[in-house]
Length: 387
Image: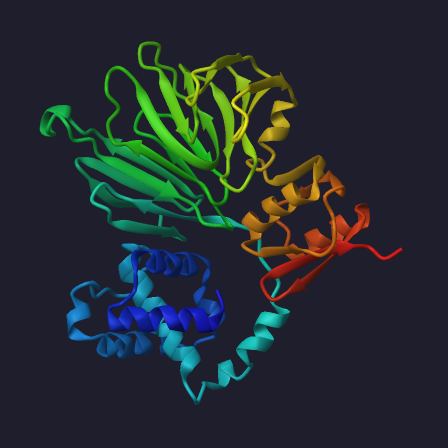
């Protein structure tokens, strides 16, 4: 978001008129912000936090728990202090010597870093925990379950939620979600591991019942399912269900794409179209494609390892349409894309590291493609090369 948009949202918060959707935008912005970007002098951030606290209306203060600066806390608590502090800092008429460079000039020369370990964990009582540079160790607990995070971007649980302690109709859920330019890993309470690509989410219960294990996902998630013969694992995503006992597979289901794909690396899975009940069984090395407009499930052989190239740290484009390629890049670097001219016939092939800065990636892609890229603010403008 631009500085003006941030200021507008912060004004709404201070006035008490901010909506839940707008607060989510602020949280997403905080996930992308690094304190060093503000170039604050030593002690400046603490001073600004005190100013911010005093500037918040008394009626609003009860919504914000007063915290000393820590990289981990409920999102609403940390977000308001940090975001408002940055807002005051940028809005001052007399900036410190370390911040004389205009914001616009910084934005114009700023390169975009690749995605990193960042996510938001929503607990069963709707509290939100920002997972960004969090310390190693326990970060909280919920209904008897201890929650742990490590610096490599992995969430895990220990302990147990006893069904007898809950009402018969109450199921406690957690949701782990990544923003654009974020990725994360979680080990579920049953031992299943899930890797989330950018702009993805997984919702799961803290306690799986004895008959099944069911989770819901959006975006792209790679699973290594813990084997339990009498307790199948079911993944729900939009109009599809995947049922397994223990296996490794990748699910891609972004709302802004034409359909979803399930790629099996080991074991066996059953893919079902929940709209009409049709289903198909996958063997290792096969992929099931289901269009959002066509109810037919198409199963074909693929290179399964290619489907999880994102998890292994690189982009692999196998003669893919430019629109599909740029959607992947847009999510990973948190930038927008604008196409100039008809580029529907342009395709890309090649393997690129996901750890390089955006400008370097685009240079490498220009060398092998028939398109040119221009970075304008937070937007990539894609056009055909001039012959």
